[in-house]
Length: 432
Image (cartoon, rainbow, N blue to C red; front, side):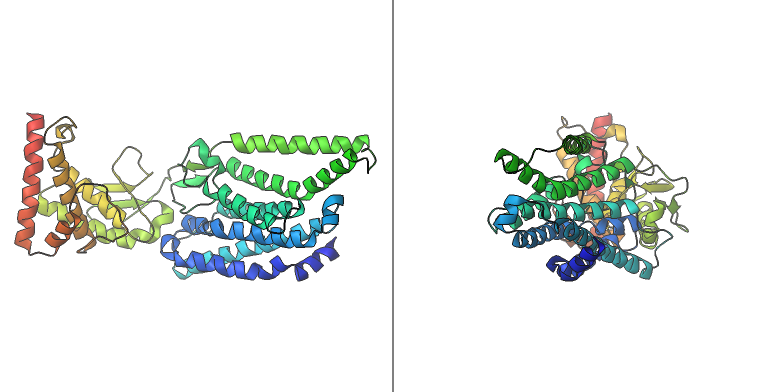
């Protein structure tokens, strides 16, 4: 077996192109480096994101090579002795691709002088499970026969649909049990051990099917055609037990607990220092503290100019459930700036005086609210315009806000005061 495996590792076409897949994985990771550099859970999740494309591509390549080896005669008779070693070579090659991605994440993060920590094993296990499942699916479809184009095309489509249709589920929702690719790895989210185990079980079922199902179908076909002896009792018992285990495992995967759950709040979050307003984040997000410190200083100054009060600290999402929070996305603090701007504007009027949907001035109130928040956001970022990639569904004129941000201080003060007056007048009607 070991000798055959060594031969497959030297001769398999897919194993030979695995370095290209590794290069593609690294290239896709580096193209979005700003999303994960400096944060270990984000870097860990970034290893899985390119598998959207690489997983189906590897499945198609595996199906093509296996189908090329399988002649019509072998497809009828089954029992390919090379299937096991070939799949083992594929799995080793897939593990190598994931290992290269992990090495890339480690090198990039260490070069960025990130805080103490390392890659999260749960994301690496999921990545290995995804690659193994895709490769096994390609081997299975290749061994089942059919036209030369059928197995590669179906393998690519099946693996892509498997990954894309279960992505984007909410944290803690039952549907997240089937999520296998992660576009982000927020520090407040972790992967449940039971969910990770079931992902491995799912991959193991597909691997077992790739090795046993074609032989089983060939044997049943031969029995039906009276071209083979009946199975001994021990063989029948083993087949029945194997099928039962696979069915049970599939049931557990489909009904298991959520894979993504909220993390327990740490005892000692890290916060900005030497700032009147402290911004606290998860320990894994400590690399964002310098940018957040600048944001905190500007927020305090902006609130002072407007004569508004801010709390002594604000925490990142998940650290203080039910309190005012800010969010961090990638290495940009634009989302945090938007949240802090909303916190500043929200202190203009008491919560009890906010207009309801039935009040005639509700649209004017929230238009003034949104415009003022937009301008303060630009001030917090020290920018004149908002990044084009940040969407906004509110009915506010971003072009006007950008124009005001570039105007002289007197114009800005008059513009701000007009919106403050609008908000306070409408709120006074509500609280009368």
